Image (cartoon, rainbow, N blue to C red; front, side, top):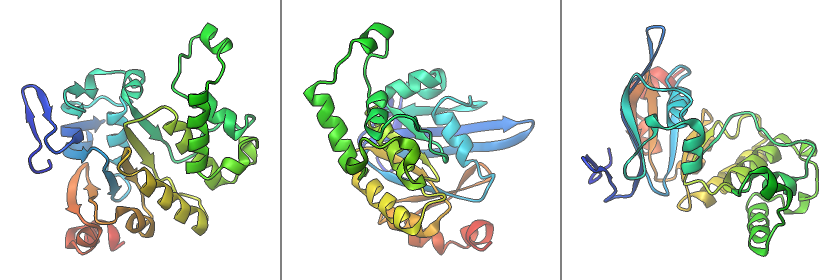
Length: 262
């Protein structure tokens, strides 16, 4: 755990702004430990890259954070006192954790603008939805998000006509419309062109500081683009194998042996 941040009887002491703290998380599937006493923390506004070989526990870790999988033991704290292991998936999403899977999921028959409108954090009950009209503040938020994801010129275009990379950006924009505090991104540049990958890196760097981000990725060039001087965490066999700057983990003999050397 980060220096100065510590767990107390009142929950998570946020002296250094820790937004997520996983404590001794263990998940087993038919005797196989997908996570093995995993302990990890992320600071407010941090962009953390998570790397590691297939089967290292990266997806299972995100499943625990979002409530899709319940750990056999351990706790997952969000903010100061909230134990995510006691909440449902819907409750966790409502608290401000958004997750993007590898394959983009957008409403292909709706325009880019309509996708962002549908994703907006509003009252989703039937009557308010039927009679709702976008106010100036909501229109401004959509316009700002369109500008951020560089799709302003395509606002009226059906999402199904977008390129793969543009669909990925739209889905990130849809998550942003829900005002998340923590974004979990699973291989966000898989299948992208080089130009789209570079633009995605620019987008995530723009989000750094405004949101906390956990990025699981295999593309080491992309990780180097977004990691900067920040921390990279290497998972192996359900635990943290190494953690530090990109340069530090790339030169770690253990990381080279189990992952980078392959």
